[in-house]
Image 1 (cartoon, rainbow, N blue to C red):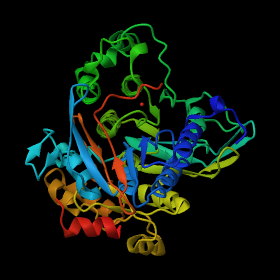
Image 2: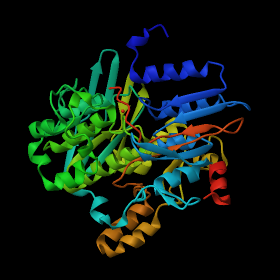
Image 3: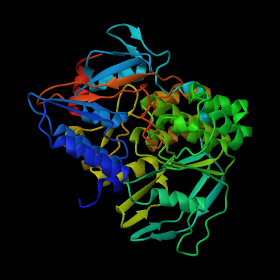
Image 4: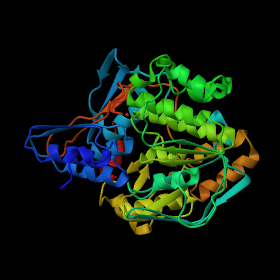
Length: 471
């Protein structure tokens, strides 16, 4: 409270900005990407504060890229589609579930209009290898401790394998980035435990454009061999749409463009372990989906390991094979648990937040249950904070053509609740979601994707109604 504003961190400044808007008396409140720089706990707290502003004669409009937060925050959704920097079209308000599903599907049924060539749904025909981990090589890291000023981090010993993505979940200030730096060798642990020496490629949390030249020149200087590889172009460069600004000066790029360049640079370096810190920052919803798929396919095909820090829960659960949960008191004393299964790790993490998730029956995306709703209470009472009742069994049936051995493995993983959600992914972008509402039970939730990146440094039926109300 007594610190200078110019000394606040990104997350602290974001909370300060939200607070300054909330304390004002107004007829219309507008929030532009309130979840930026915030961890999951802070995002949900911000959503609750914003919803508390609702009165009978007020409007609240929110632009948001985190679909789970948008779902939790809004009462109605409008979809924005078009071509960035050229034109945009706003649809009529839809229910939250229907609006987000329209955005993911790329088709407006009431107008019989398709604004995207492909739906944002997982392609079952891509092959079983993208879900399999290569256990042929296993590595371990020791139990470690690190003290930085008044902050102390304790890390349990853990292991990882090739073709595996481990996502780190926790509040801001619990040492996730410090853990990455310890693995990378940028920091030395206080204990004498030896971290295995491996080639590391890291995408930092903060990206500073220092290179004098174009994006193409940067790639030729840093990752020439990878950039000239047709496989790398197909798997990484083209899906991220870097051709749109490949010949622009690096220092003139927006936050979202810089983020995509940084992801390509990190994946382009030959390494055993890839450390990727908050890849969703500055990206809109579609770009987050594309980036998730790019990272996952690259790690599986290259048979490497990735440790990823991510606060977007949908993106995190799509990427993760296993999870490391960070708990403790942020900024003072934190603890990193050993890697555990996605289901167990998410349950532990969400229990600490006192939040439960369910799956959408259409596309299986995670949806936050409304606090104290019937489903919320039932899941918490059973200790099942992440619902796995609607795991995509159809997916197993569809993939039996690929490999009988893989089918057996997948069936086991479904029964154990380990299989990842069928998460929306595709190769296009240029659309958005927005929400609008009024009054005591009407919150204007908005989301605009496909708009220009911020360069600051990133059917309606009874079923859908019941789903939104009962969640």
